[in-house]
Image 1: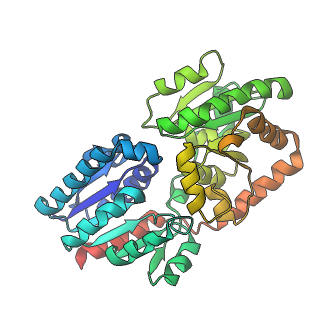
Image 2 (image 1 turned 120 degrees about the horizontal axis):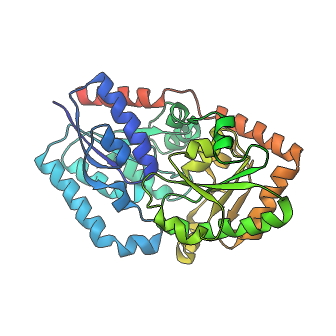
Image 3 (image 1 turned 90 degrees about the vertical axis):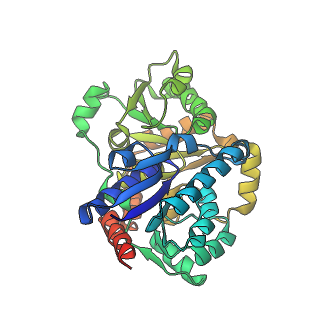
Length: 374
């Protein structure tokens, strides 16, 4: 029986981690998994010491508030290294936490794979030395990251993006739009994120844009995608008095079949891009976190789909620009200008081509199994 300690601290990491566990078990059914993950990884057989919903904090202020909890969790993981003796550790994204844990893995001489590289090319380049010192294998999601790491003496593997294997709607366009009463009118999708802090900062402006749109667009319908790990009650106070619908477990259907998506910056921008739907990307964090991030970030775009495309193919609104009027302006621009709309779809298709071929989870699982044999 081989043992793998795996750590994913976010909803997106849970998604990729579940696919990886599933593929590894297909190749070697006797592998035992313990660590940190969410509902999807648990469904594939992970025994958790923490659920991702407990780790779901973002921004400097939130991290400082949770420091005692973070330290306690790191000690619990180190205790697993000492007593459970895993044959391999897999860290999935979540760099603020995982790069603090990596030195402990090295201390116990346990092989370490980092799956989904931290976005060091965007900020915190100094962390490359941690990767070089503590990580045995790193698997990246974007081909340009291979060249980035090579410059720092780190060999990275690019197997394509795992989202290409899983981003598919569950319904066809017609049946979905019938289900949300949007057969003969525009459908706008709102994806405010999976963390309560994101929603508090972003959803009010999204909902506020409905009033602007009603005045300027005419009849339309709106839906909100609710993340699997999110308590739907968090959304209730923002949508009270509106006719917007909340849909759980239908995120890919919203992304694929809405006419325009207003989406919080993160993995969801890439998923929406893969499905080819024009979008407006919004990002807002605490003022202090934004100031610190602005001084460290070395790229012009924050939306992953724009980064993959190499240019701003869809609009981004940051911080104080995240207002109902500006959201509505961009949505209307896309819906009312057919040329802009169709050009955006073409650019999104081109960006998708940069993500490589399907099968990334399988190829990553093969590498992990090879590490177990060494």
